[in-house]
Every structure is written in C-alpha cells, then in structure tokens.
Length: 180
Image (cartoon, rainbow, N blue to C red; front, side, top):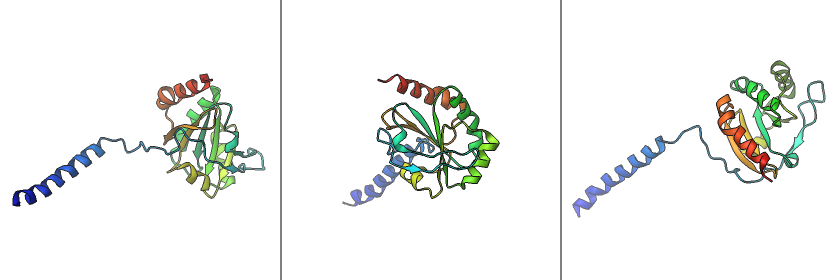
C-alpha cells in the first residue's frame, strides 16, 4: 500500500512533465481558428469614409463568387507597415484583398492608407471591434482566406511575409480559384 502511495506522486509528476514537453513542441504563433471550413460570420460594416480616399463598406454576404483575402489592420499596428507591401503585391497579382480597420478612427485609417497606399478593393470600419470578436481576431494584422462559397479556409495570424505568400497563401488561393 505504501508503494502505491509513493508511486502516485511520481506518476503525476511524469504525466505533468510529458504534458509540458508536448506543449513546448507546438508553435505558439499557430492558434487554431474555430472558423476554418465554416461560413464567414455575418456582418455589415460602414466604409472608412464618405470623403476622398474612403468609400463604401461591405458585408459578409459579399464574400461569395470568388476567393478573397480579408485583412484586419489598424493605423496603430506596429507590424502592419511590414505586411503592406506584400498586400500591395497580392492585389497587383489580381487577388482581391478586402480590409477591415479594427478599433481605429476612420480619419486615422484614411491617413494611414494615404501614407502607405491602398491595396484593398474596399475598406470597412470596425470601430467597436465587434466584428473582429466574431472573427476570433486576437491582434493585428490577421488575414482570412475566404472561398467562393463564403467559407473561411485559412487564417494567418501576424503579417503575411513574402515567404508565407509564396509557400502557403498563393497556392491555396490558386487552388480555390480552380475549384468548380
């Protein structure tokens, strides 16, 4: 009986070490999204402006017919300027990119776009952050790949680097375009 009582804490310690050892092999930047293979949550957001450089917003219902990238950004985001040239390249290669300015004042978003350029077909304002919550956004930038049927197929947390574009997102976008 004493042996069993002695082995109980030792067994618990071994199980705890195994749990942490497995956990430490995981990439902390990879967070699974509950939206993968599910419809984009419903939303309808206003544009960032009724002024020059702005335009109409958009709704989730518009995300059908062709695969699209949905990029969540903000003027106050430190990593967004790093990603912006890649988004410009993606847009220049003919892939539709839509933007949601998260918890940003529309004027700040317009100023940011004026400074860095506009790779987006349309930009919506999520000033309250409600839509980002529904999308499961944990920070900016984040990008979602949405297929022709309006289903989320991929989520990129953090900036899209040229390598991520070339090796992961572009092949997925090409595959989604080819699907009937």
